[in-house]
Image (cartoon, rainbow, N blue to C red):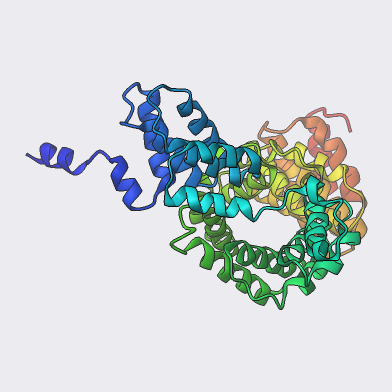
Length: 433
């Protein structure tokens, strides 16, 4: 029957299907679903650690493997897996200790080989022999990275031709300081060979493209992001999915942006940059209620003072019938080209949404700042709109007291005619002006 055929076509996904497709996020979701439902897969903890590791969540992988080592029936190779997770967390001594507890294998050999190449900072910092000059440079560079960039300009520039990572870290330092041009100058001639280098070149080109309004830089950024996100080695990693989200963001394909951002949401739900991008995509697709909620989760003062944030939040407020909150956003801003742009947005969006009171207030301020006839026409239409709402009983009658002074501030001959009609109605309906 049709029903049976449909039921057959609804095949329950299996873990091996996800693993064969390298869909680690899908596999992890299935494993957690089974574990929480009380019907775990065989070796579920081992597979959860495996999926977390391949998604780049090395802390989660470490926790899963550590819990496994406490069980009496723990497979011996888990010690090596734990060592790998610790290695990627930068805990090299612990990584070596755990790796040596496991059985001899190719993976153990590779891990011990990589560990042997790591420089132990505290032991080498005092060695002054000239043969250790490179090691000292590496240590100084690493210390800057560990201090979060503090001292970067003193240490990193002389190292950019000695240590390849120094150039990348200096680029990141300049980006954090909003010095996009310096970041671009440093990376423009670098031929990327690793996913990290492609991503960083993409980020720098995107930032520069947005800063100077260059479509060429934005196109280059989009291509770099697509290269990483579409590659077999990165497509199922968290950075790979973020790259695809960034690629579609630059292409303004916001439905695709939300698919990729949604697939990593559990990892970034408290991350301000992630929420900023997610909210913009939601708003661009007209989901203003959800977008407003996500915008308001953001804590970063830098983002909250960004015009892109302010303008999108104002639009969400207006679309959600909260024009007063949009107006209050404008009132908190210093006078600037950004505050002028926000006024235009408030005026036009409020007018479109029939929130004429704040449309009139915004057009009134715009007209005082720039006597453009279009602002008078907008203000006139909004004031008449308020009057119509008062007649329909959808706006307080007292609002008329504010409408008249706004109209009088314009030296247009139409003003007196409009005011005469409003005053006559007020008199007939005993509304004090």
